Every structure is written in structure tokens, then in C-alpha cells.
Image (cartoon, rainbow, N blue to C red; front, top):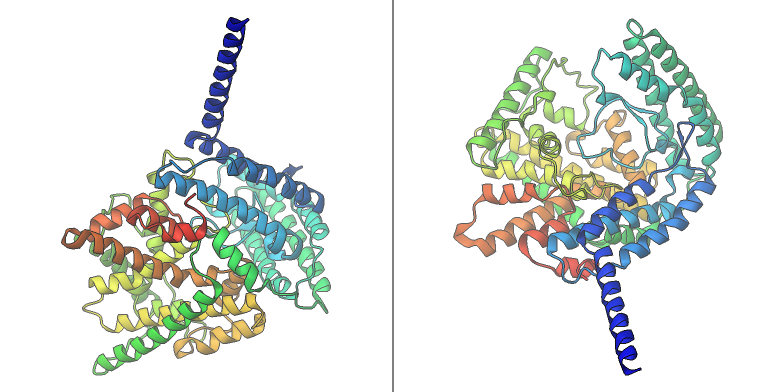
Length: 544
């Protein structure tokens, strides 16, 4: 009997050990990567006859099932993981929070016509499109023209469900939000122009695709008419508020800042940039002012020269390891003569000196890196959803403007330094408009007026597309307008802290190569990995 008991105890012990090992295996780091891949499939809406299902019933089911995914993730014990592994865990957690916030607060499928994009005619310079949009839209820029028969068939197949797509959108858009509908109307009208252009472009080689594009345009025009009718008399919806804004910053974007912090940051950067602008202008007072290029040919020559200079500067001055595949050739090409009445904020800069804007276009080098040097890690190799990359992508590109200025890129063109100050001021102004729109201190009209009136030199065109694009993004993607400077602030902080530790051994090229090697992830997570400083991670609950 005693032997039997001993045997049973041994079996029970082995079972417990096996169960513990099995549980550990299900929640170790490789298991996180597997869970991530399943999660990415789950968050996609179902396609019903080619139309993504954002119906109230489907969204309710998805939100309910999301809790299961969050519980599975919460079961992981990451206490013994490396910092990069803990960061990956928090990237997955942030994406799940992003979907949860979409359901609880933003609900773009129910309140934002902007969300229902049929087609994108151009590529964003960021990892993914800015702001929320439907799954499986046509990315026209991905196709090479003239189209092959196979590509023409793919586009046609998607265009042929446009009427069903718009019918579903009408059924889903049940919540009135006057300002989001204003922005959505503008965007949908732009889509009609893209569809018309596509029809004209393919009419010769693919008449059947041209017919589908025209039919899709007619459907889009009818949808616009429906939106306009519904829009009449619609009232402004209640703003999301500071409490929701702060939750979103912390839990989705892994930002250590609050709404209040960002207001102070934007104001400080606005004052600093405007004051610096005046000092630069005083310093340059004996120099001739910058003038617009006289012709399109002159602007093209100046543009190409700026590209060559920027790329050579980064390579020759040991800024970072510039690979052979890295280039800004996509920015080359014919230019038109400037029309002062039609210039907008960034074309006002570009047509006076083409070099400052090229620094921000480090975006495209970053995208080339993502494609040419993929990560074995599926989490880092995938563009993060919900624009979780925004402080890293937009913040770094903005930081790069001043970084290159201080590194010496503009030493022989001092007037260009004034343009850098102007662009920084504009980012602060747009950040404040984002913050105060969502807090309810400004409505859409007031936020747009604030941007136009505060921009230096009156360069923000009230009738230009930049104003609508910018506020369209910020209204639908809270905090995006702040990330240009919040990310710049974080980038400066990482440099300062890393160099303080390294002392005289600090080399900027080594720092940048390390920075790039870790992926396009939130700055707070990069700081944790690169410096080992975990205070922000603790505040974000990311270190457990």
C-alpha cells in the first residue's frame, strides 16, 4: 500500500511538473510571437463577398472576443525576459488596447465617413497610412503602370464591389458627428477624382477596368450626395475629452506624456522656434532674402541638387551607415513654376530652398530600410497598427531637421536655418490644434483658423489641401498632431542620456546605427532598450 501511495505521489508530481513546463512553454517568448500572428488575423474584419464587415453586430462580436485575446496575453509572465522581449510584449498589448479604444471611444466605422476609403492614389511616407481606414482598400501606388493583365484584374475585382461597399457604409454610419462628416465629405470627393483619373489612365489598355472605375466613381458620387444630405443640420458631437486622450496616450501609444504635458511642450516649442527665427533673421539681416524659384526647370535643378547634397552629407559626415540601396530618387522629377497664390506651408519652404524639406524626407530612407532589411522577429517586422509608430516616425523625421542643421548641413546657407524654425513652429501650432480640438476647447473651424493665423508669414494656405489633410488626420487619430515634437523631444533625450553614459566614447554614427536597428517602435520603448533606463516603462506599466 505504501508503495502504491509513493507511486501515485510520484505520478502526481510528474504531472504537476509537466503541467508547469507546458504552461511555461505556452507563455514563453516564442509563444508570444505565435500569439501575435494569430492576433493580427483576428483584428481584421471578415470579408463578406469582398466587402469588409463593420456592421454593428460584427463589431460587437469582435469587441467581446477581444477580451479573450487580452486574457491570453495577460497570462504571460515576462519578469525574466530581456528588455527587447518585454518591449515586444508591450507592442502587442498596445495594439490590443488600440482595438479596444476604437470600439469604446473612436468607433470610426460608425461615425467617420473618412474611414471608408475605396482607394489610395499615393503612398504615405510613414509606415502605414495616417489615421484609421477600412481594411483591404485599393493601394493604387503599389501597382506598376502600364498594368499587367493580372494586376488589372485584381483592381477590377475590388472596384466591382464598390456599390456594395458604400451600401454597407451607409448602414454602418449611424452616429452623427458634424465635423468628422465635414472632413469625410472632403476626402470622398477627392476619391472621385482619383477614380476618374484611373479610368482615363487605363482606358486604352484595359477598357473593362476603365468601365469599372467609372462605375465606382458613380457609386462614390452617389455616396457623397447621401453624406451631404445627412450632413445638413448635423451637430457637433461631444469631444473625446482629456481623460480619454490621456488613456490613449499611455495605453495605446506608450507615451509617457499627458495631455497637459503636451500642451506645455507645444507652447514651449512654439515660443522657442519663433524666438529663434527672429534671432536667425537678425543674424542674416545683411544677406539677401530667399526668393522663389523663377521657373519649374530651376526648381527641378535645385531639388535634385538638394537630394544629392543631403544623401552625400549623411554618408560623408559619418551620420549613419548609408547603404547602397538608400536614396531619395522618388522625389526627383519635373517641377512647375510656383504660383504664389497657390503655395501652401511646405511648398512655400520648398520653393525657397529645397534642402530643408529633404531632411524630413528621411522617412523614405526609413521605409527602404524596412523593406530591404526585414527582421526575423515577426513583431518588429510588421508595421504597428493604430499609428503606434507615430512618435518614432514623425518625431524622428522632425528631429532630423534640426539634427542636420546642428550637424552642419546648412552652414553655407544660413537663410535655410530660418525655414527650419518656421517648420518647427508649424508643428507646435498643429499640435495645439490637435490637443484643444479633442479637449473641446476648439471646434474644427476654430482649430483650422488657429493654424492659419498662427503660422509664420501667413504661409499656411486656408484653401490648400494641407489644412484639410492635417486636421483630417488629427481629428480621427488623437495625438498625431503632437507626435512631431513629442517624438523630437524624446529623440533628444535619448541622445543626451546615451552620450552621458558613453562619455568621450560616444560616436554619433554608432548611436544612429543602433537606433535604426531596433525598428520603428515608440520612443519610450527605444529609450528603455538603448539606455536601460526603465522609469518610463514603470510609469507605463510595461516592466512587469
